[in-house]
Length: 230
Length: 313
Image 1 (spheres, each protein chain N blue to C red):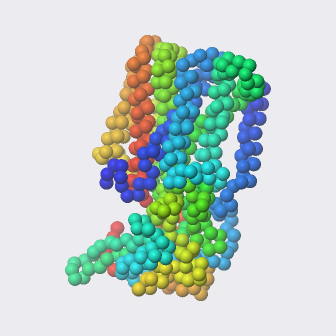
Image 2 (cartoon, helix red, strand yellow):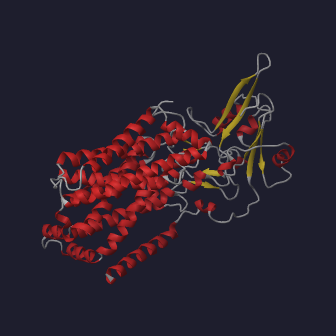
Image 3 (cartoon, rainbow over the protein chains, first blue to last red):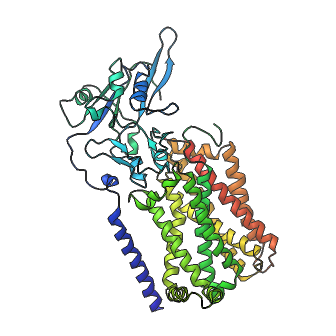
């Protein structure tokens, strides 16, 4: 019995040793959740002013063109609620649904290959499509339901604040540029002089599903039009 | 809302089959080890029930993994899950457990059937014979590790779903335990069914041993199901909505009450209780009871997967 106990311990020890050696190959991108954040000067965020939004979907179209998003999927949706009130005093409410670029992103936590990661330079939640195998765990894990499988690449895709398209050229995201009513404001949360921070300090805002602890970086300024809803 | 197609549905029935097969494999191994350790000892390799488990466990885990790979949108890239990994991902950790499990599973099967394998090989492969005799010396360690890995695998399928924080029915601490216990009972049922199909004695010591464990297992499963839904309802909010939606009068409500509770738990429990320990067991009795258990666990996996994704926060 003593011998078999020792053998058992040896076996468990070998297993643990194997696991710790395997630790050397682990993916660096996914560590952002576990290690203290490296301080970067940039942390991008976005504000959607629901008072200004008229639901024209110009942002959706601009995003589609700039980022080559095929029909059937989209990185951004404008959700419409209403109409509220009797004709002619009717109003709608519009809300932006897109990636919230969470600080504690559930998609990054569950991704088995590290294909979903938080860019340390900018705080953008991005997808490394070379690593993505299409298990769709991130799609199921995202409480905002903004991820989809891109029909051409067959990998997970979503809003990246135009990181690979317009941001790379020093431009604002396509949706911000396209908005005719200036309902969208994009900028650096860490820059107190940015329009984004100034706006957030001036108007009360809310974020979706904060109770899940995801710390989203898409802020909404709630419309004061329409009915009080519970 | 249709039962199999609704907005927000990400994982479909192939995943339910995978969850079922992984639990089944872990359960079959668990009961084969118990049989060998407590009842059969060195005669285990004669037993059709241990033989059935030794066939079912690898076939089920391979089948499940095959389904999983083909359910990827890029099946040919599956190897990336093996190379890259993310310590915070339940799936990554589960894949590690699955890989280790398969390795140790084959080592254990080799130990149990060593005499038979040596007979078959003769003197043709001295290396294999040496490897086998080395493995047999490590059998205690292999068995211990395999028990741990089988339990981990059984619970892992539950953890996989409970990591989805947007769905209160899935993001539930009881789920991994529920999956583990129901997985074990499906493994027991598969072992019994396979055993009698391989002409094992339906009144044998193996059947009596497994049936003895099955009654408490079913009772624990009922208790866990009760805790699972009571917890959701008492939490209120969307958790309550999710629980009541699942248990209501829709398609999935029927699957739960008639399929999971009726066919899967009540009938096998009743059969086990009615059949006194002294009474003789017949082939049909063992096969039907086991089939009901298997159907129940399979329906439970589908029920949890679909109703879980129906109601988000």
